[in-house]
Length: 416
Image (tube, rainbow, N blue to C red):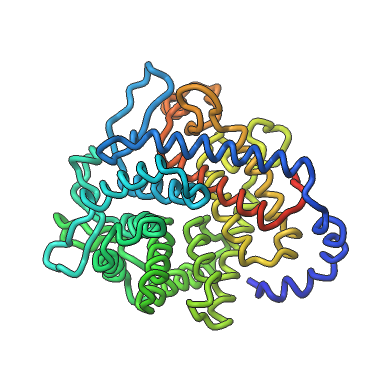
């Protein structure tokens, strides 16, 4: 992978011919309309999540718009934490929304008081536990790396508007659990399962390391201990180096969000070579995402999305990643590689996919439409097309908020 600075140097002259026209265009009616549409869509989705928070702080985790389809009673505490993160992003834009604040605090209290408990035998570690009696998954009691990462992300998001919501010593103990899960090379064990002896890495998640890194970096912003930032960098360094010799790179939006966090702050004190390593890895992820986008007019319903079966969340998470990358990938490269165009097309897909009226206004179903074929797998897929789950909304909401910030920071024409 060539250094991004080399790309920029080669492309800057060509880009200057384009930039003199396209980058100086003032905000016009098209962009104003798109901004208004985004703000309306953001509010719809945020309010749906707000209404989904019950009095006990749990979410109405999953429903199906088709009343004939029975929904299994399951719960996922990682997605609970992710929803808190997205709602907190909305509150940051609307700090006077006290109903939203109350809902976030209820959900945060449930996470803090009901899901976070010590690790047996070590009083210095706290973990976010996935409990069989809550999850109804049939799996044993376990603490997931991603749970600790997103737990920190959620609780530290609440700290921004409610300082000391979670005692700092407890946040540190969550951070120590992540470090306890980390191996010497920067990679991680994915789960801690007491009934199976503790640390387990038989199964690996694409997303847990990025979630853990983001949580640690947010903890570093609050606690300013290099223990957290060093561990986060080692995690991202491992992801970058382990992919260098591979032809393909995994699409990991959490890694892009963590990379944005570590590169956007001068407090992390990276060397130029360290920053280049992370930036070049991020570029490869973005290039992979762009290659996956559906742009053919033969698929008009799915155009701008990233899943040929019409699922919506694959588009949301890729947009989250691309939008995070716009903060550190130079404008010249973004424009000429098509990152910005991919973002605009993807957001149009999300806006069209959102439910805009009725009981489920603001929500996102699992997929746009059923597949017109008949097989056991397709029938199973079709039963879930009308399913609504909190993470479907969470990721779309975070993507749209990222896009609203992107428009504010990059005022120019909307490109489809």
